[in-house]
Structures are given as C-alpha cells and as structure tokens.
Amino acid sequence: MAPRKKKAQISVYLDPATMGLLADYAARRDQPQSLIAEAAIASFLSPDAAEQREAAIAKRLDHLDRRMARLERDLGIAVETLAVFVRFWLATTPALPEPAALAARAKAGERYEAFVAALGRRLAKGPRLVQEVADDQAALTP
Image (cartoon, rainbow, N blue to C red; front, side, top):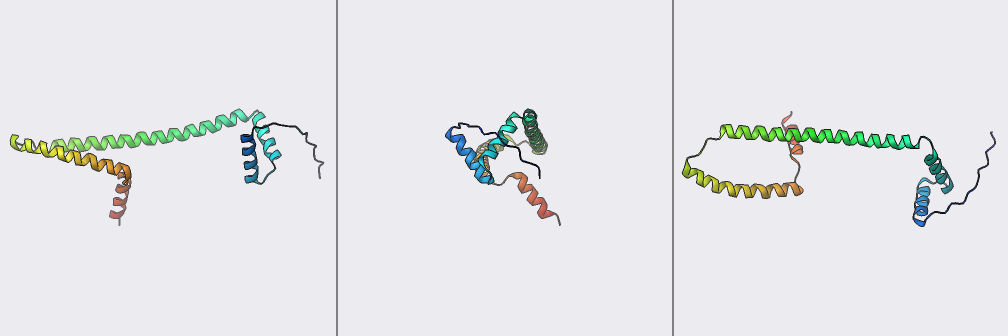
C-alpha cells in the first residue's frame, strides 16, 4: 500500500450562507466538508475549468438552438395551415346578396365575440390542438 501524502491545513472564513450551502451539500453526499471544499477549490483552479464552463454553455446553447428550430418549424406549419384555410374559404364561399350580407355581418359580430371568448377559455385551460389531432389520428388508425 502506498503511503498517503500529508495534506496541508488552511483556515478559510466563509459567510454563513456559503457555509450553510457547503454543509447541506456535504450532508446530501455523505462526505466531509473538507473533501467538498478541496474538490471545489481544485475545480476552480484547474486550467480546464474555463473549457468545462465553455463546453457546458455550448451544450445549453445547442439545446436552445434545437428548441428554437422546432418552434420556427411549428410556427411555419401554423401559418401555412391558416393560409391554406383562408385561401380555401375565400375560394369556396359565394358572395351574398346585399340584404343577406347585412344580416350576415350582424351575425358575424356575434360569432366573433363567441369565438374570442371560446379561444380565451381554451388557451387558459384546454388541451392543445396538436394533442387533439394526435388523439383523433390514433382513434382513426386501426
């Protein structure tokens, strides 16, 4: 068995909040506080510390980049869906004669108010359309 190297002892003054964090961390890991402090100091003084932090930040940025790409894709799908619907609706809905158009405009105001209220309720608590489409598709697939 190789002889153990004698460790040097130092005195460090920590503010109570930092001392509490150290004590809690050491207790959770069931390790002595001196071992945790030694590892933290070694990590801080390590020449690789900057590279490790940079790698961690790069990993987080990559994750955020992927999420942004998915959001852009989803937004593009939503915009295209709306555009196709509006184009289809405009192409297939005939114009109404003037007396009927006045009544339709009045009814449209009522329907719009109901639509906005329903949209508000759905955004507040309801399931998302994506989930409903997936559920409907699963129900249709034998």
